[in-house]
Image: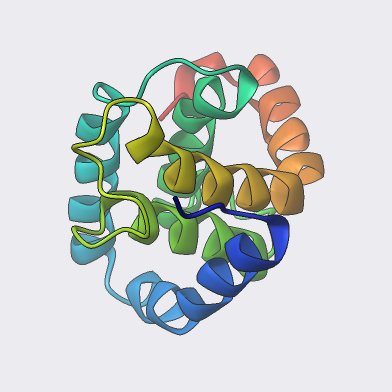
Length: 136
């Protein structure tokens, strides 16, 4: 059985950064990715706070792309998008068709992305509370 440790998750996240940065220059492709992530969220079992943070992460990226919330580092957005890319990737380290275990690699990569962006995600949530009309 493949075990996903922090180093492997970081390697996976880092490998998607170039593609993530390219997607930031193509809002229509990024929007398609966000739709896929939203659909994928429906299939991932709820395992603690990591999965529950996905909607906020998607919303942050949408708000950044639409320029509603530009006060975030592009590196933070790229880290989130890199995690999303792995999440929707067809070829995982642990195939998604293996119940529960199949999502462990996805969750590990998203958890790492979340740990990297958490302070800015919290700042975004505070901003959202003061701007409810702009919720992505």
